[in-house]
Image (cartoon, rainbow, N blue to C red; front, side):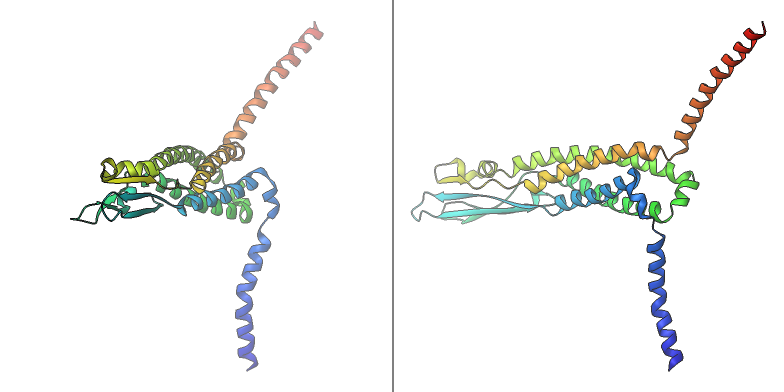
Length: 268
């Protein structure tokens, strides 16, 4: 019994010991440096960006009052959200006649491309910054000794900077088009029953776009974070050291020449 209990306790302690060793090996003071601190901000704002865009949902609507004998009043409520394929969102338009009661209609536009690109970029940024933080905190010796890691980090950082600029601008333009397509006045303009005398249409409440607007703001914040981090990552690359070495050599050259000239003058 004692042998089995001892083996079970050892098995229980081994995963705990591995976790403790992993946590002890993390150099948390690296987060106080600009390179580590900015990566934490990149990780957080990537979550904010794809979370606010991917979780958005809104509604628009209108009211149709038929001028028939029954004086029917129909309230139209249209729900939409990510990925903003509005041309697949259906709603029923009353016809205000005796033959048919309603007709299936769709919203206008497909804005899934900029929205999905924005969310996908946020997810990739989240995973990359998390992996970079693990490498920077736990295996910092590999990051400093192996020249390939800083070069790869710099190239990826520049790429993410460009992609965040494109994604934020494209999503901002797409959101502007979504606001125009989901405006209640656009909804009534698309219904043919509202253009005749058989019905009176009233626009509903304007959709709330606060969360979507914040997602665009988070996109540009991510761009500035990645752009600012390019300099700190570049300082870790061999290219930065080569530039300093050339500057020191150029600075030492004239001083040596001037010293030689002064010696020749003194001899004369």
